[in-house]
Length: 411
Picture: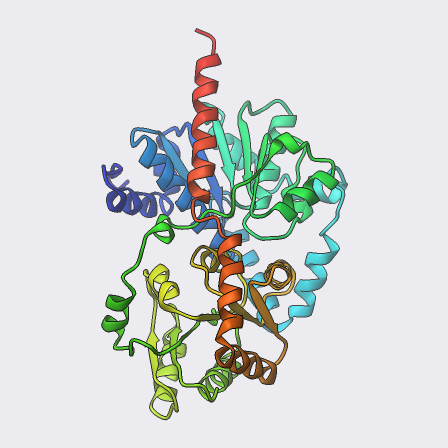
């Protein structure tokens, strides 16, 4: 096995160690962590939230024994690949099918046979890896993992504090389990809905959804603009289309944004997909307005800070990052189910608008750029919803619970 690195004494070193650890399950478990964070890579929001929490914990105490595990990838890599393929295929090619699945399981009885079956996925493998020296506290940023931990607690096979961090702005039954000790949620609306589902209010903390600690930092907007060769007074539209939008539609959306009559600059984040990047570069050659085409970036916090408007699909973490930066969003083609709910949350609270067609998208963007006072009001509403310190809040509760557990342990 590769030599296991150790967390550093500063943010950068600790973040690099967390990235390494999340890709080396055996190393993580061989550390016999006292705190174990369970995530999944269906979309990257669950894992990003897990890393944000882990980093804040290490900032509190870099000697903590801490582990991060991609749950499905660890317990059953074959099943993980199948689920990933099914998920991507359904949201890209049959979104109505995914919407049906999501809504049909939205209010399933936590004690039903179906839910009990889901809560046993990977249970044997997971328990076998932990039973000799289990963690003192487990945090789940993915719902199935939380259900497995709850089941093991109910069976008396795992004596552990069980925390759940919900990473969307909707309450889905898959997050709700009998043996959860604390829920961390993104909004007051979610807290109320959990209470209506008979969850003890004392077990609910409105923390916000954890994001990278850099979203709390100030940004020198002039320097960022200069580095990207963007004029100082040009309104900026940030387009983060994601990997789920069909390629043909992706180019059409670029065209719609570009042809908005008000002068502006568009920043396109193509991510890891080389095809999207190349197609966007080709379009840039004939664009009416300035465009900046980027591939994968690690400075989204800076791009959001200089932008006037985000066009995105309403993923839980992207939505949260925009709230932390006070960046209004026009939502286009959200993934049915959880992202529909995120979109509804933004629109209901005045932080976003939803475009239902390419024509609608163009009209909304044009209106907002031509009515900057409306955009300013949306930005104000957006900032009011943001919780840039969410990861710190969650980490403090985890750390306090861990120390209380240690203090109460038998001598």
